[in-house]
Length: 153
Image 1 (cartoon, rainbow, N blue to C red):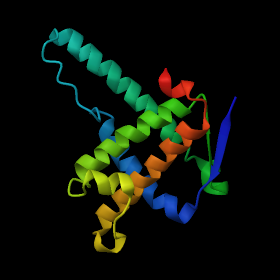
Image 2: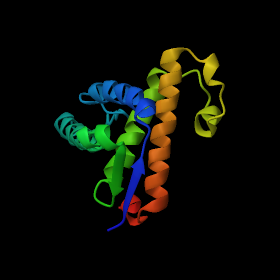
Image 3: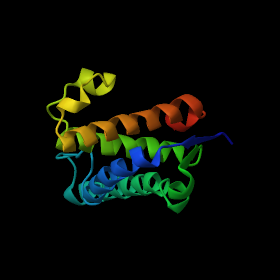
Image 4: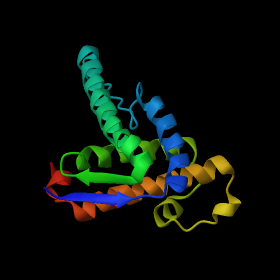
């Protein structure tokens, strides 16, 4: 089984974890990408959305589990074929929430390219932008270095 271990800077990542945890709390009851599904039977729609929410919450728990007491002692997180897909999905959900909540005024090209003057941003937006880039990097690491079949399933 392929495994990636990454050593992260605690002083840099710890403040970003506060943002991730805040958004994760908000995702417990709401999908990152809300589903209308108006054409479906209400009971079926409720069950479907409930299943999506359960899966999303499991993915977010998997992401947050990377940042346990071991992380705070050695700064290392590990991605493998078992947790990679869930971490990619959780990162996407949180990035969607970051865009919706903090980064509405930042254009797509800027978000994806990372070309922005951080000093010009207000503190909450700066932290959100750094979190957005951090999660994008996590996703890229998993996609590039783990077996591509985890992404295709």
